Amino acid sequence: MTDPAASDITETAWRELLTARHIDQGLVRAAYAEPRLRRLFPWAGMWELHFSRCTEHPWSWDVPFIRPRNGGGFEVWGPSRGDFVGEADTAEAVVAMAADHLPAGCERVVAGNREALAAADHVPRRAARAGCRYDG
Image (cartoon, rainbow, N blue to C red):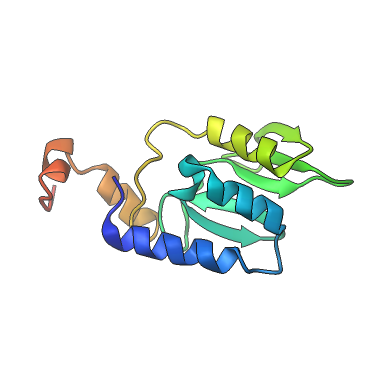
């Protein structure tokens, strides 16, 4: 479950991307419409659409990302740049492919960087459900 601060930050990032000129808006709208991707923090770089389980740099690199394909269409890569997942001609198809390749446990986004995410991932589930702080 995503904490409220991370949800607000994530929604703000989506709103900014939905008006950005440096990325394909059809792709951003398709990703925003997909609930499994919409709950992740979005960021764009080099015309690529990335997703993260944390809201600050350095972001998590444990989920796929989408980039434009030379000549049209899109490709899904990830989680690392060397892991090719597939390609599709439409934004909707590539978004579905990216969402289908999310690893288990991607439903939680934390406010902060990947160190905050790592710390949150180590909280025992019982303590996290109870809203307790866990110091180790």
